[in-house]
Image (cartoon, rainbow, N blue to C red):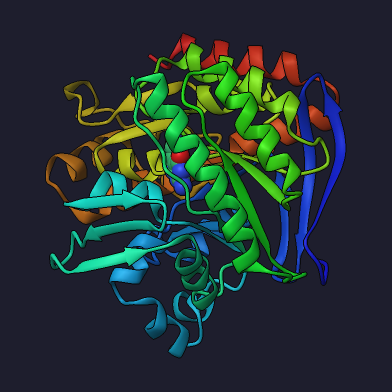
Length: 373
Ligand code: PRF
């Protein structure tokens, strides 16, 4: 732990990086996977399980929390950590992305975004300054700039407009954030699938000398090879001594390939959301537990796992729970999936430390491809 926000690069293997973010509320081992706790809960999980699974940090959402229970209310209740009983670091997304994907009617201009709440239809305005103010009220440790993410495919002109706007908003967010030594504000690279715009965005943000840099606007409809190309183009422009966070990504395969290109942090709803829908991630690939072939399968998902959900429950029981829409089905599969994601990150970190990341990646991908039947 450290009184200030500090990123230390401990080892590299090819472009893959092993590091540590140290800050007053804790230390984050990177590459890191951040479970998503949108409304102040990692859905269907106790935070004790999330922590024991190996998470050093979780994510919260400005958009959801400002609408319910409200940022000022969270502040009166002692802040998000106190409210949800998670004393370790929390990263909050700024709200721009969720406004675009969730709210009804919205109007975006230089000043910010006006939108209709998906909860009760009320009108709200969010400027870059208000986004940072809200993230401060939540007492978030790593705060994200307000940005505009364009879904792909899109016209280059539209991608350019949103990227330039995001760059101007980054500057306003930096000023609004000011100097908070134990916390950090990250910028977000935009630029869609346009190499020149990605480079311009990364260079503009680099000049702002922020504590960390996210890559946004990816995994929004483009094929995986486009996402990876954009990482190949963007990451060399960013300073090596700052953490890089790929927002909203992704599958285990997306993660391992992005680590290979130099990403340090990830978040995604995939392990928890697909868990609630009956999809299990394992060392041997994906298992759709709803499938009839599991109905009398007494084997656990993986007898070698240290996660009780993975090791101790039969596939037959998981199949029955999910088919019956029982809450415990989603709970056990979310637990399994988050444990698997964290086990993958632990494996990645160990492999980088030992200088065998390429081999680890090949072995891991082979095991997924072989499956488990
Ligand atoms: N911007 C923000 N949050 C995000 C994204 C983005 O571009 C994405 C895109 N994958 C996920 N979450 N602010």
